[in-house]
Length: 142
Figure 1: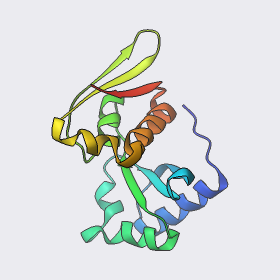
Figure 2: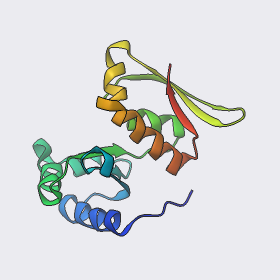
Figure 3: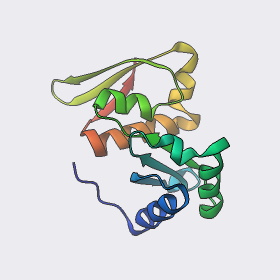
């Protein structure tokens, strides 16, 4: 699936890659959530993006003046959805392809709130990224 980025998202990706040396495959700017920015980091590059003690991602936050969240890319829709809901403990993901493509996610009961996030921000981000990169219509917690 092809993702179209805004000029702002492209500028944020360039800054992110300059600061961290990691590859950003996508960028969501959540204007409805205080301008929070989510970067989709290439698989295997999360440690590089975060940096020692979180230093690199903190530098990105300082330069952008915004809260930054990171999601690691994956090779399967199931792994991608689990990564998008981290740090919640996801025990299982099933993608149903009946009338539409829906990921049903089993989350440890103690982490349900983490998966949803304050005001639903985490689950909304997971849904948007899953739609953009895996053509999933929805992500549902079971």
